[in-house]
Length: 157
Image 1 (cartoon, rainbow, N blue to C red):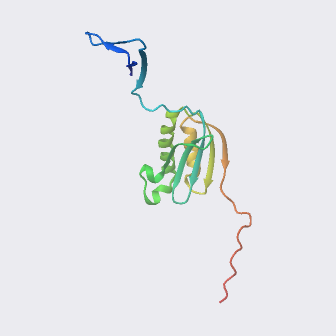
Image 2 (image 1 turned 180 degrees about the vertical axis):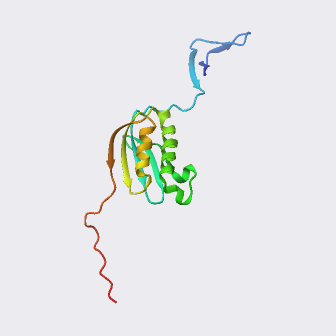
Image 3 (image 1 turned 45 degrees about the vertical axis):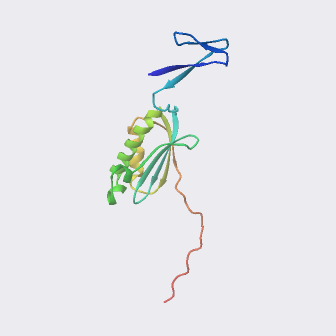
């Protein structure tokens, strides 16, 4: 799988012999290793799973602990369209396809963060457990207002 190429570097005091080789007083031989394999992937054994579930879609992202994305998918990317994107079945398919990509990195332990109030929320968590990943923690990070903006006045007719 690996090729080794050697290179002759010589100074100005080189002479050619009848056999075609170059002889020199200061000849230096280098070996360059050329690899034909794919780009090496970093090994990530622990990561975070972000599930963003809305009324219209489910977005599933797997990151390492620093937040760098390893793999992601959504119901629309997998092939669902319209009202089928928000179903629990679509969420399970999304999880399955994304974890298959992430297992190439050696992912084993995950922390799950769930955001939103869609129907695919619980189905996605069950699908993560069914795919063989060890769930360390489940957090709900849905944003909740703490008496934020003022409500509009009631309409006078």
